[in-house]
Length: 258
Ligand SMILES: Nc1ncnc2c1ncn2[C@@H]1O[C@H](COP(=O)(O)OP(=O)(O)OP(=O)(O)O)[C@@H](O)[C@H]1O
Figure 1: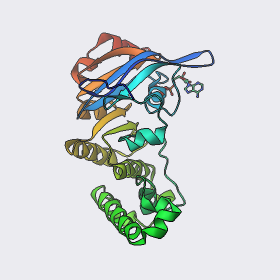
Figure 2: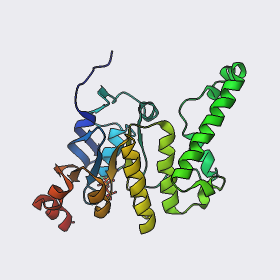
Figure 3: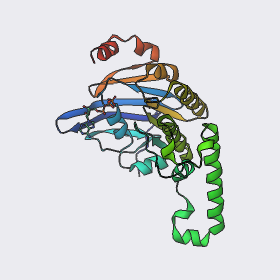
Figure 4: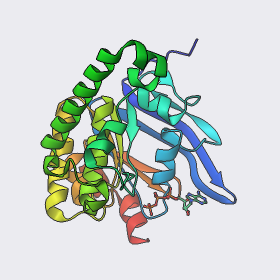
């Protein structure tokens, strides 16, 4: 039986370490994400933010440390099993499949379906068709809400960089997530679309989804986040409200010294 852990956090990680050869990418790092929050993760280039995301979501295994999601340790789970529990992430460079349509990209993200097993398909053909109809309706509804409905039947490869990021975010909603990790949602995105992405994040957060966001755009971090964690050289430098972080001398020095 897995150990039950009581806390107010949806995600909590302590003592995380990861070395690549001689490089200490993440060193004794911790992070905590309150249920219902929009939490930021910032730090200068090479601070270890993406490596920390990879450790949290088990895309790479830590040398040491523990990650608790929704009161349960998740260290032993594969990324797809973590996603099935409602913890999903996006990547710095959006991972959409260019040769599939926007709608097909959305449908690929649907959780385990009856149609994945040959015998279940054979036995439950009407149920499979019903699930397919429901998933398509859900995908089209999400695309409508993010302004990509006109592109539903276009190849994802034809989208702009910003639209691909939006599609990657929209796709996470197909899995009914509790927690979404966003890796630089505003990077390479034009200012109009950045504003739209921020509005969507606020809207999804109001619907109950918790966010942890890596972002270099400080306006985005300051306007969205309730709490911000700062990494520098692989380890924790500070955490606090956006206002506290903005005026923290250690944080200013880490950025100015970059
Ligand atoms: N697979 C890897 N192999 C070797 N070194 C790596 C690997 N991944 C990351 N690193 C190194 O670990 C350190 C932290 O990198 P990471 O990408 O996590 O930082 P970051 O804060 O996300 O940076 P950025 O803001 O520039 O994206 C860097 O020195 C990087 O070169």
